[in-house]
Amino acid sequence: MHDLIITGGQVLDGTGAEPVRADVAIDNGRIAAVGDLSAEPARNTLDADGRCVAPGFIDIHSHDDFNLPVNPLAPGKIRQGVTTQVTGNCGWSPAPLSSKHRQLFLDNASFFDSGLSYDWESIGGFLSQLPPLALNVAQLVGHVTVRCAVMGMEDRPPAKAELSAMKALVADAMAEGAFGFSTGLVYPPSAYGDTEEIAELAGVAAGFGGGYHTHMRDEGRNIMAAVREAAAIGKRSGARVHISHLKLHGRPMWGKAGELLALIETLGREGVSIHCDQYPYPAGSSGLKSLLPNWCHEGGPRALMERLEHPEQRDRIRAEMLEGMSEAGYMKIAQWSDVMISDSPTRPGINGMNLQEIGDRENKLAADAMLDVLLADYAKTLAIFFTIGVQDMEQILSHPDISIGSDGILTTVPGKEGATLPHPRYYGTFPRVLGKYARETSLLSLPMAVRKMTALPAAALGLTDRGRVAAGCHADIVVFDPATVMDRATYKAPHQFPVGIHEVIVNGEAVVSGGEVTGATPGTILRRAPK
Image (cartoon, rainbow, N blue to C red; front, side, top):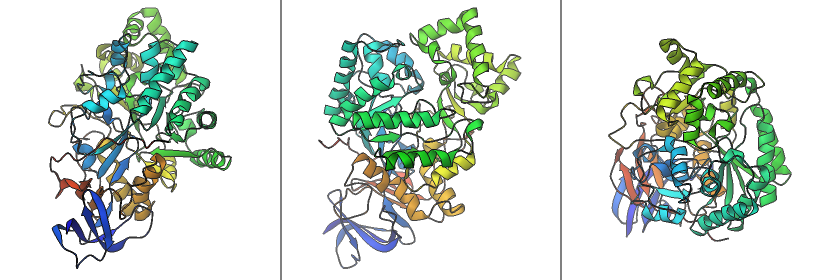
């Protein structure tokens, strides 16, 4: 007798194949059979007639490791149909920590803060202290964290002993089950590392069978060079390369998606296989401090505050920012109205306003308004950046071999959202692809959309028994209505769950039933398979 049979649904198996009407049996947390199971008994049945039965969605790019300790049910994710997520992206992971630079890292990572205790040192220690979870987690170890643990926020190449110490920390994290090594090459101190340093550290991860996941050094004017750097690191290290949130930042780069995709395909033919993920929105989100020149961050947030308070240093920062907004500059924005404050801890009344509006209201330059916000918030401010061309975003989205990832950041716990306005991708990424881009615009076929959320990221991660509806696979399943599934979260009202996601099953147990969170915690910490 089966534990559960899901009857009469249209099964999308995750491979991109057309849906077939079939039943799905689950036993002991795994899929036991797929087909006509009308003659087989079960302790429980679930009628999926008229709905799609698909593998649980894999969010290959998330930042929930900074939120799961205080939000283990992750309703914003499971109600989208997410059953597995990859954390530790963009160089940021909650560990490893060192006693020497512990506070420096906590200050640097404060824009992620969800009230974590940080009473751990290693990746293994962090993972062991996670509470029971509603979904599965695969953890990466981040370069921002590793470099800060060894070198603090110093802008210089590592000494031989320091590089060895960083390699040891990456090796420890991999031995404790991390899936790979990530960089955030726009975020100090990761930004201070050169290609050789990154390749050495990625090589450690590769030695354990792990991948190299990168927020590249540039996503704007120099993006082609940044892609080539990622490929070079993959070639030198032997690590599988994964480019995070593939996009073209800034109006001068709009219209170049075809050239970008062609370069990635060419590098693949030359022997460097590059996988990518993307979120389906024309805006990104990160700390507001990411707009500042890299030199401002040396020494950490305290040193940054001193620079913002020093008249001559502030003049230099303002001048470089204004120069950086020119076509030849480093900035990702062309105008101050491109930047919306989403979470100001000390000034929640400006959440939802753009920098130009704040400057106009306060009768000051928008650049000074920004610097004043950072100073008041101790650089903890989160912002949304409207810098991505819709046509480029959709052209990248239409590529069949680019996975979907939310890149979502949430700094609050359920019931205490307050006035924060996180990017709507935290609540809407996967239903948006299904509803807007598969059903409404037909940019993607429904089977292809599901593949980009399931079997494709599973293959990139080496998860051979997840991401498909097939006998023997773990029973991570989502049941959704293809006629109604849609995101509801917006930039000004993001804390809204999607519609059309009816059932979500993780390892054979329902975490969403009838569209509501059950409170069950069957998730598991996934460990990278030994090489």
